Image 1 (spheres, helix red, strand yellow):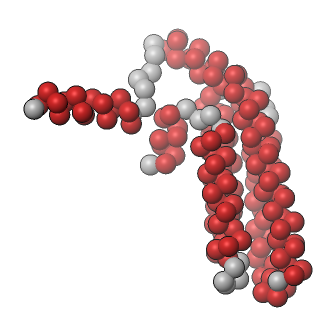
Image 2: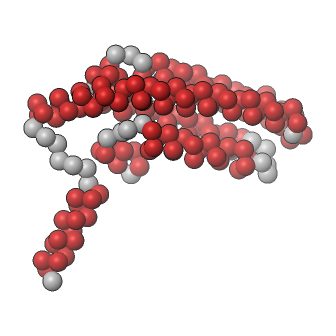
Image 3: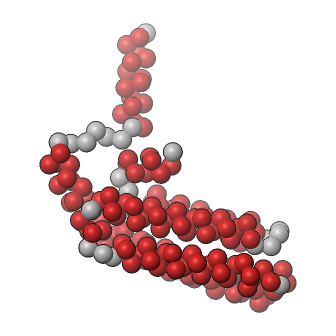
Length: 167
């Protein structure tokens, strides 16, 4: 019985804990190689995410023109400034991901991707809060799901930064 419980605990640890690091030199080489291998994909992912974030500005303008609730001061006083602040933050973080350090340092690349995702998610959360009722949930909630798709599906983060991010 104890042997079965021990095997089950070992299985859970192997499944849910990040892998043990290699020897120091092998780990450095692996992280450098991993960062170099996925740098182009991460840059493309973050660039597409930035363009998607900007494309939703057109959706906001469309709503400001055709939705009576957005015609009030909600669009110009709340939504447009938040969207622009988010776009500026994403532009800066996207630019940081195009620096050579993102190709050689996995920690730097993970930090850039995580900060970019977190800033986009927080801006969409602020937009959800500031949009007029009852449309706030319908307009911006799908964007938050899209941000999570970009983070977990396309950014190729390592296991440890991902576990730290979600815990």
